[in-house]
Image 1 (cartoon, one colour):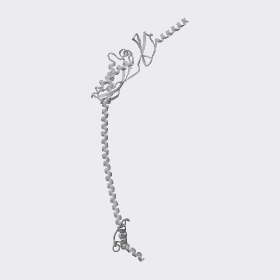
Image 2 (cartoon, one colour):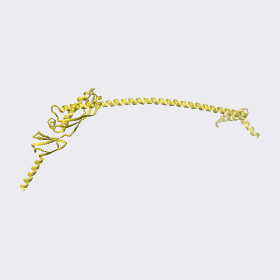
Image 3 (cartoon, one colour):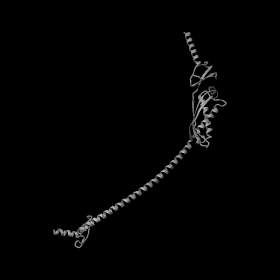
Image 4 (cartoon, one colour):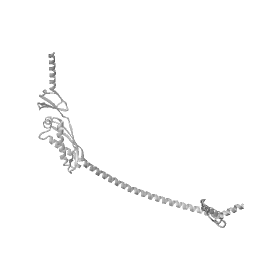
Length: 298
């Protein structure tokens, strides 16, 4: 029984020892084999590989894919005309030489990103100091990004190469600092208010002009209508007078009777009208007296 356990334990130990000598490198990674803390070999191709068991040899992995580094600080940068602007940028980069990268930068991607962030930020500051805000917002921004990329490549390929390749450098945003932005917004608001007030004043003046013209046209129309009405009324009165004259000329007594009736209507328009006359001697009631005598005789 003890012998069987010993054999089983030995087999397990051999399996564990054999497993510690095998490692798999993914197609997205570099496999770095260390021998007593020194780089022994860098595996660049994916597949199954062999090494000595720990502690004689160990393996670590570094990402070989294209990585993205985004800006993390909002420190303002001075332009050529001493304007304070804030920029956002990103860098696309990859590890191309794992041995140089580990020796001069670090053993993981975070170490390279940290140092690359500092180099890119300094390069942007230097290049933006040479350019105006207008140039940053125009097509010349492409030249700025190319210059920054070349400067960063010069830094990482210097006396102690970093073992990385910078593929692209891009600016995603250029903006004034908050204080300047607020001032610009206030000026824009004041300008818009001035234009709005000017438009309102112009509109009010135009409205007054239109109303004055409409009032003038109304007065002219009313005056013309009144003139035409008076003309028609005068023609009607003339025609009526002619008709009355013609009718009264045929029968003078009827004319006198009709006019007396009109006088009576005008004199006794309301029940409260009172006249004090001598009915026996006044000619005003002559028609009435004549009508009464006529009725008596009948």
